[in-house]
Amino acid sequence: MRQRRRRQRRRFRPQPPQSFGDVYARALGQRFYVLGRRRGGTDECPEETFELAGSTGNVYTVHVGRAPSCNSGAPELGGGGKRKPIEGDCPICFCELEAASPGSAVWCRAACGQNLHRECFDMWARTKKGQVTCPFCRSAWAEDPAMPSRVRMDRAAVSEGYANVADQLGMSGIRDTSSYSLWYGYH
Image (cartoon, rainbow, N blue to C red; front, side, top):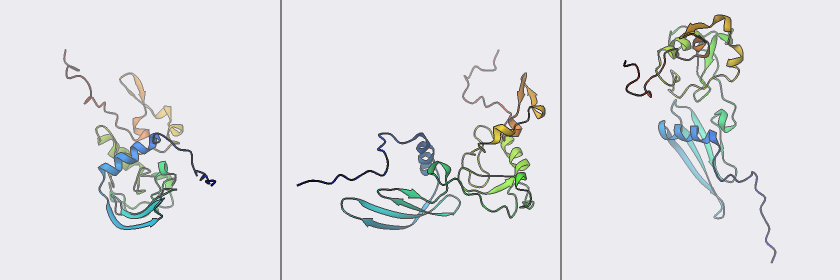
């Protein structure tokens, strides 16, 4: 009797990709609710589909089976990120966001897709010690991959003898010494 070999849709990975670590950490650290669960598939290849409400209340569908999928839009999952329409008020200054000038707004690429004024976000980022987070969903802020190409050295501040572009990158210009030796700074 000749057995048929199933062709795998993707190459088997003995270890998950590096991007999985971020997704896994968020799944363990953020609150979400299972709204629905449907079982399917066969005994040989069971499948399940879940409806989840994420940390911002958005509802996502996750399919676990031969070809797992999720419609969350998270870039590391292949969704490309989902930016919400530029409308409503900025969560920091409470002034209206202007859809006519999308360059004046930044958005949470890591999770919720919400928009806020670039200047307001820069101010928010300067007040954060350590990792900068989204003001809406508190996920670690994912930078625009094209951001480094827009840095203008002629607008750089001088800090500790170096050109400092933290404000252009949405970073805090204050050094985080929390991981330094306890003796740092004592003479």
